[in-house]
Each structure stands twice: as C-alpha cells, then as structure tokens.
Length: 394
Image (cartoon, rainbow, N blue to C red; front, side, top):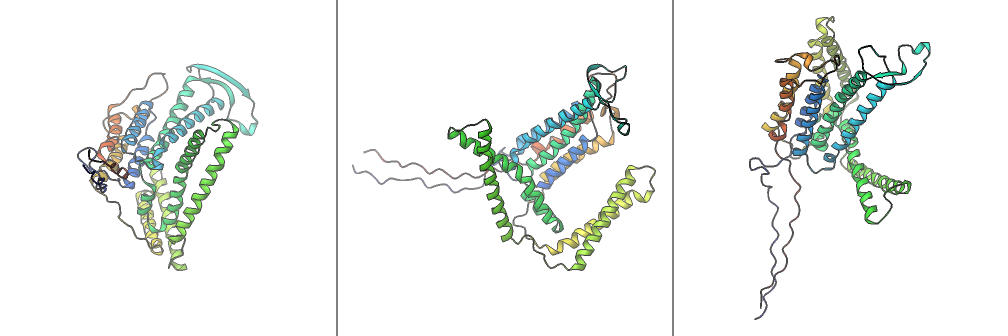
C-alpha cells in the first residue's frame, strides 16, 4: 500500500488560562493593594515586641508569598530579605553586648567582655563589661521587630510588580518613581546574573570557589549590568523621559511652594498628634491642611507630564479584600480591644516564656487571609510543542 503523506497536528492557539483553583481566573493583583497590605502589617508589627506574634507575622508573610508570588525576577528575592533580617538581629545583639548598660542583681549573668575605659565626654556609654541574659533577649526582640518590618517591605517588593506600580503614581512623582523602580529592580537582576554566570561556569567545568572564580564571575556580571543600563537608557530616551514639558517657571515655583508648605503641615500635624501638650491646631487640622496642599501640588505638578496608560490595572473586590485585611489587622492591634496592652509588650522581668494573646494573633492571621482572598497569579504562556510526524502502517 502506498504510504500516505505525513501529517502534523496544528499548534494550538494560546487561549485564556484556565482557573487555577476552579473558582477564579489568574490575574495580577493591583500593586497598590499589596503595598497597602504590607505597610499596614508593618504598622501592626511596630505595635508589639512579643516574639511569638513576630514569628507569627513571619509565618503569614511566608504563606502569602509562597501562594501568590509570580515567576518574575523581582519575585525571587525574598530569601535575601530574610538574610538581611537575620543580619539585623545579629548586629543588634552584638551591639547590645559590646555597649553594655550594666547588670542588676536580678539579671542572669552570662559572660563578661574586656572593659575599655572611655573619656569624660563619652560618659554614659560603657564599652565591654558583664553581659546578662535579659539584655541579650531584649536586644534580640528589638532586632526581630525591625527584621519583621524589613520583611514586610520585602514582601511588597516580591508580590507587587514595580513597573505596574509606576503607572499609578501621580505625574509629578513620575521621574522619582522611575528612579525608585530602577533601583528596586537592580538587586534581583544582579542576583539573576550571578546565578546565570555561576551555572555557566559549572557547565564548563570551571572553578566554582576561590579568588579566581570570583574574578571570573564579577567581570561577566558587570558587563551584563552595563549592557542592561545602556538598553534602559535607550528605551527611556525613546519614550521621551526627562523632557521639560509645557510647565512655565511660575507653575514650577507654585508647585514647589505648595509641596513645601504641605510637608511642613504634615510634620506639624504629626508632632501635634504625638505631643499631648501641643495646641489643638497642631493636630488633625494641620495634618489635613498639609495633606490638601500636597495633593494640590501634585495635581499642579502633574500637568507638565502627559502619560497614557495601556490596559490599566483594575481595582476590584479582591484588591479591597487584600488591602482591608492588612488595615483591619493594624486597627485591631492599635485599638486594644479585647486584650491588655501589656500582652503586646511583655516584660523581661521576671524571665518567663511569653504568652500568645488570642485577639492579636487572630488579627495577624486575618492579614494572612490575603493569601486566598487574592486571585492566583497569572503564569507565563509557554509555546505549544508541535506534534511529531506520524505515518500510517503499510
């Protein structure tokens, strides 16, 4: 029998991605929603130094990032924020041990460092001396709180697309936003370049350790960074970045004056809220006036930058839910409703294991609800593999 002509299966056209969990289609969440959620959670962290609550915050961050991060380069850098957090805790403990503040009879003595005498003008600060267990635990707790704040910012950088966040900035802050976006994207791209060069050297059976290996990795990484900078400069120049626009000198001066007065109003309002002896006008009235002046300055300064947005990110119920989880968590911790404020900041004396207050723990777990209230992230569309040629049997 004559053989038939070889047939090939037509490649399937990439259609819309199916729902990852059967309920919602994958899409990218609005970046402002992730930033509001992360900043609100960082605000809640600033309210407590209970180590159990702080570790619970880290667990919530890990859960949300694991379930909702994308495959973009900036979404792979959260582990480096964890390394930075550990470094912060270690530095805080070392500084507390070196610059000792003395020891009381009720402290538990651990060890003693050599004492270095200080001059009279440096009085009040002791270098070296006895170190107690309570001092190290207090330093570790303070460092852990700062580390949690850094991890919250790292979670926002991991989950939110910095390029999409640039779209929602006011026109007056566009150039500043571009600089911040580029600076945020530098670290993940450098890490990716180092990993790619290191993997290439291993495939070529090159040295993977030592000074020679470091020199062989640094040079290609710097060359890659230089080429990326040139491509970025050409792209920004082709899009008209840095143009002066149609703003006159008078409008620029008015914008600067409004922004300066607005910032002064915000500073005066914040001082009035923090100081109970300040006049009433330095509270909410000054804060509201400063905010209005800043908004007016941003609106006036945004006229000189004309931008168009292609396919703007929608703000839907999922964005409201994610942002609301973080804000509600911070409000519950600051309201002191249903729990004692001392449970958020347990005392070192007497030395005992801290307790986990149920209401603050529930508030932090509420922030973790963003992991399933947000839609699953969209996956990159991979090209379809064409079917192999088949022949009919003779």
